[in-house]
Image: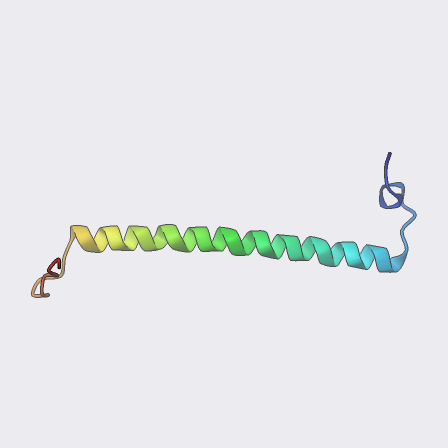
Length: 63
């Protein structure tokens, strides 16, 4: 069975609420994907820095 929205009998308040809900879900999805992208870019930067240390920089000592 389909809901009233699928049949096209939608009140303006229901339609606006659904649109806001969709935008919120898209925003959350974009935020999570952005965090994943930032994480992988940070890993790439750290890997690059570890592979090519800066000349003259003090070496870190392990405790």
